[in-house]
Amino acid sequence: MSEPVLSIRNLNIDYVGAQTDFHAVKNVSFDIAPGEFFGLAGESGCGKSTIAFAISRLHRAPALIRKGSEIVVGGRNVLDLEEEDLRSFRWREVAMVFQSAMNSLNPVLTIETQFYDVLKAHTNISRAEARERATELLKLVDIAPERLDSYPHQCSGGMRQRIVIAICLALKPKLLIMDEPTTALDVVVQREILQRIEILRRQLGFSVLFITHDLGLMVQVSDRIGIMLEGELVEINDAQSIYKNPQHAYTKRLWASMPKLYGNQTARETAP
Image: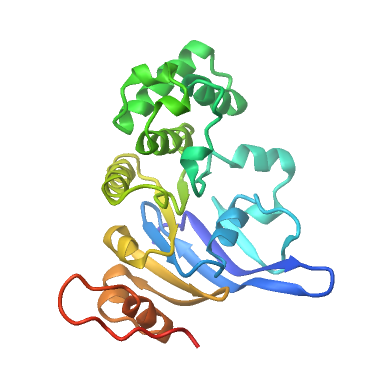
């Protein structure tokens, strides 16, 4: 078997308080294979985004990763990287599409300038070469190159989301983390974004960590899914098994909480 793109072992993360600590992530372990679309689902506050930020060491105080945790990418434990190595690691090996990503764009800079900022920070590329690279990336996400001269407010929400994804792919990362990337978009645009990601994943070969509370959406696009509850990874399986034969009581409750389009509604239960 090939080496995983991402291997997380015994990840424990606390939010340190004045009087007590909150144990946000509890001994979580999982792998993501090359080219795999891995979903991480669970309700708000269960630790999904905390894990996402930890992978790129973007967490800030009071978040604290406890000793004994491992986040391995490319054979290196990310938690051991020095600042200069960490700067090179981000975007080049792992890139992240943040929650409400379409609001991450700088409103006073053109799209072309924002591509250039990323490329200049990590390469010796010229402005002309950066524009050529940005043109190629926009075409990948089905946006006209003329949009390079636009400002973010001149683009629709779906276009801005695709632009952010294109910027994340600028340095050809091995892993793309998507933290609730479709939350602010209508269902039609959500589908377009995820279809485009699927095309790019097969074309470019990167892996995806897709984080959402929407299990119904996740099962449509993921190869495997992990279910989180109160900081713990309580179930992990291929997407169809999670859908057709969930094992953990919480996973069953997640499915029961979703309204059905046809037939009788399932009685809804709350987690204990």
